[in-house]
Amino acid sequence: MGLIGFNRARKPNGFTFIPRYYNAAKEDLDNRLGRFIDPEKTKSLTEEERIELAKSRIKMSLQSKTKKYVTDKSQEKNSNKRLLIIIVVLFMLAYLILQSGSILSFVSKVSQ
Image (cartoon, rainbow, N blue to C red; front, side, top):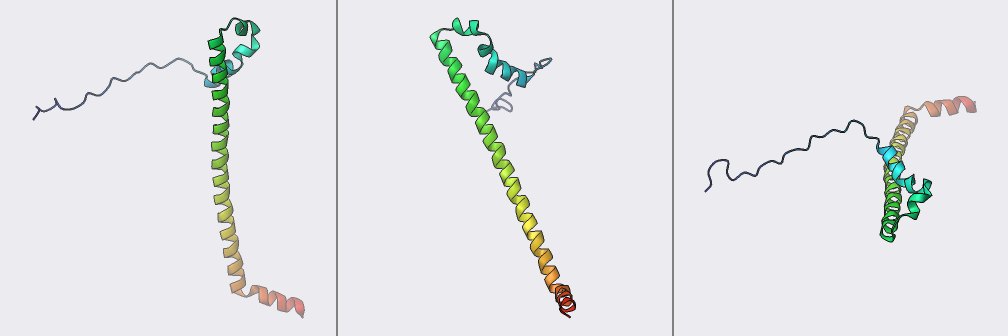
């Protein structure tokens, strides 16, 4: 049996550095296009660096495709919900109109 406080795990210290400015979109663009714009950089690369560059290009393209797939799926789900609500509302309106008898009185007036 331990003394009070000795059997608890210590909480880790947090990292509190806050950068002054960070533009994720610009950094992503620089990573994707940086080596293609300057041909001198690609000539000086070793074979391992070229392989890593190719891997990073493949990884970025797969990430962008999965992001698009996820947003397409969520949009499709929202669209299906909206369609279901519209169909239910239309059926309720049709039911109310048919139950009120206004259609029958309209048809009898038109047929006379």
